[in-house]
Amino acid sequence: MTTPTLTITPAWDAPAGSVEIRTACRHGAYRVGFALDRQVTERVAACTAVMHHHVMLDCACMWQLWPTYRTAAAPADLDAVRSEVNKAWAQLQGVTAVQR
Image 1: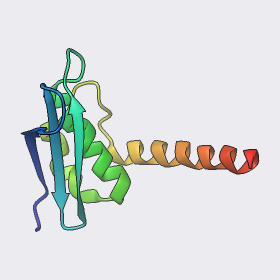
Image 2: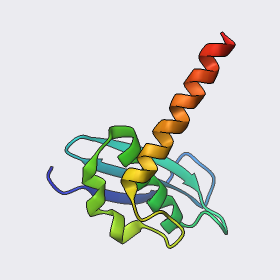
Image 3: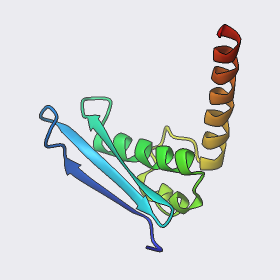
Image 4: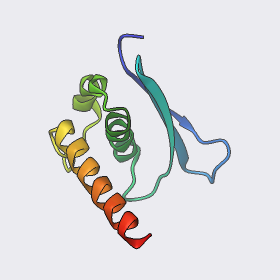
């Protein structure tokens, strides 16, 4: 698979109005569920799924999908998102280690 994909399907095992968004590329795939409402629209869910894939796999493939699914409120730089998440995660792990 050379081109990343994003598919949106109704979630069959969740409340009505829920969707599953699957992102896939040659590095891997994720399926994330969202309950849609006034604030979490299908587009917000798709944008979040693309960011999730990019962060979790440290994957540059999602840059191809970003212009299509990015919301106006989302950061333009996916790498900056990944960097911030990694920093927050490192801080959380440090706090957890101190608490042990």
